[in-house]
Length: 216
Image (cartoon, rainbow, N blue to C red; front, side, top):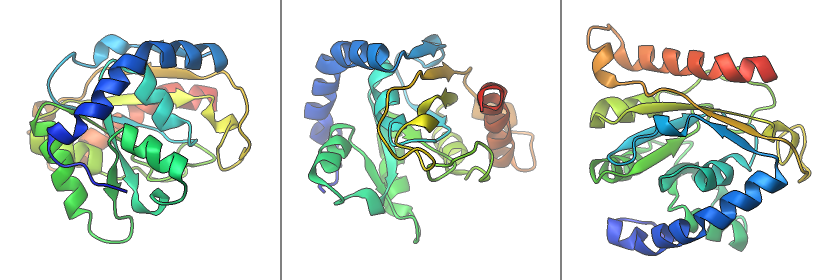
């Protein structure tokens, strides 16, 4: 799997994503009876960190197809090379390989570089697909990236995908999906905190829990 470096390397997948956004969005919303609320909460330009809960393999593509910005997701290195189809999908989204077992220095540098160029980086703070929301404490990487770059941290809640390609439901099946995009969390509101990154992640958790907790 080829690593993406300069934004020039992303020109093709970004252009393809733009061209395919409308048909992909229509198909995904029809097949999954998908609803999206709060799209205005993602700034139309400039750097953004999005962070969502994670039930299913469907979460990254559904988010990528239904947001108005091109998102580069951080993906654990163990899923690269599993299949050619998956590698093509990872390449399409310009996925950043994250070393689960080591120190993710290269991944963080690449994510920071993309954010500093005005791009959008997506993370799943739970670090893996979970059967139940809240079973794993969220990692701090999303808030750390926002704190380091000045990008807003946008919480996203997604429900319904726990019924398809998920740990408890491994089969691919049609399911109703709902996505909520919540108000951005801004680093400068936490400057007085003893642990600003931790406080940002706590507010991320509360924003997502307010939606996911009602539906799971």
